[in-house]
Length: 463
Image (cartoon, rainbow, N blue to C red; front, side, top):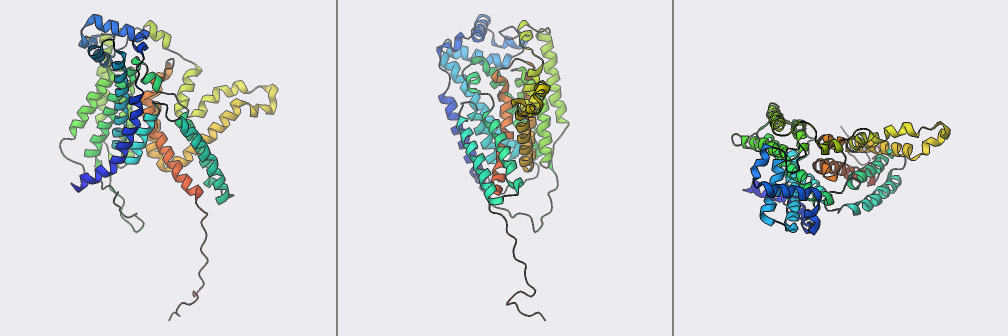
C-alpha cells in the first residue's frame, strides 16, 4: 500500500496537468452547421447510409472509393451516424474526444518510455496545446528568456562563451520547435475526415505504450553500476528498479499487436508503427533493459498480413485522387528536412542563390544567412541536449519516422498529428536540457579556494 501511495503522489500532478490541458480541446469542439456539408464528409455519410452494413467495409474500399483501406476509421462515422444523424454537434464532439484520448494515451506512452512524471506530463500538455493554438504566447516568453540569459551570461561569465552562447542559439531552435509548426486545431477538431488520423493515433499510441509496458514489466535489466562514495543518495522520489515480473505481462503484447492491426485498418500512415516499435525497443535497451527483439517479427508479421489483405480487397492501381495527391521534387525534401535537420531544407536553394554578379554580397542574402543561422541553432541544440540524448533522440527519430510516408503527398495538417505527438518527446527533452543549461549560465562563476599554507595558521604542530 505505501508503494501505491508513492506512485499516486508522483503521478498525480502530471495527470492533473494533462487533464487541464485537455479542457480547451473540449471547449473548442466544432459546432458549425457546415461540418456535414464538406464534400468528403457528405459523400462519405451518403455511402454509409446507402449501404447500412457497418462491417462490410472490412471487405473492400472505404466509402469515398479512392482505393484506401480504412474500415476502422469508417466505423467511427458509422457510430456518429447511428447516434447523431444530421446533428453536426455530435460529430464535432467525437472529433474532440478522439483528440483528448490521444493526449491521455501520449501521457501513458511517455510514462512507459521514461518513467518520469514531469517528462510525461510536459509532453502531453505540449501536444494538447498544439491542438488548441494555445502555444503562441510562449514565443514571446522564449524571446525574453533568450536575450535575458544572454545578458546574464555575459555579465556572469564574460569570456567563457561556451556557458551561454550555445544556450542562446538552442533557445532559438527550441522556439521554432514549439511554435513554428502546423496548427492542428482546424484540421483535427474542425474537419470531420481529420479523424482518420486521430483514430489511427489512438491505436498507434496504445500499441506503443503496451509494448513499452510489457518490456518494463518483464525484460531483464542490465547490472546496475556499483555503489561508490560518489553515488547520489536515495531520496523519497527515488524509484527502485524491481526485477522482472512473471506471468500476465504477455497480455500487453497481445494488446500491442491487436492495436497495431486496428491502426493499420484506420489510416495508411500506420505502416510505420512496426518500425516505431523497434525504435522504442532500442530506446529501452539504451535505458538498461534487455528487450526481446524476436517480438519485432510478430509486429512485422501483422504488417505483412495487412498488406496481403489490402491487396486482396482494395484495387492495386492508384485512384485518380491518389495520382492527384502524389508529389515529388523539392517539396518532399523540404518536408522531410523540417523533421530531420531543418537547415538541410535550404541546401537546394544555396546553389540558386550563388549568383556570380553578387560577389561577396551573396553572403548576406536571406537564403545564405537563413542557412547559416539555422545550422548554428541546430548545432547548439545538439550540444545542449547531449545529456538528454537518449529520450531526445527517441522522440526525434519517432517523429520523422512516422511522418516520412506522408512527405510524398500534397500536404494537409492532419498528416502531422501522430508525428507531432512523437515530436513532443523531443521538444520536452530539449526544453529540459535548456533549463539545466540556463541554471549553469545564470549562476556566479566558481571561485578557486585559496591555497592552504603548510602548516595552516593556528594548526597544531605535527609530531
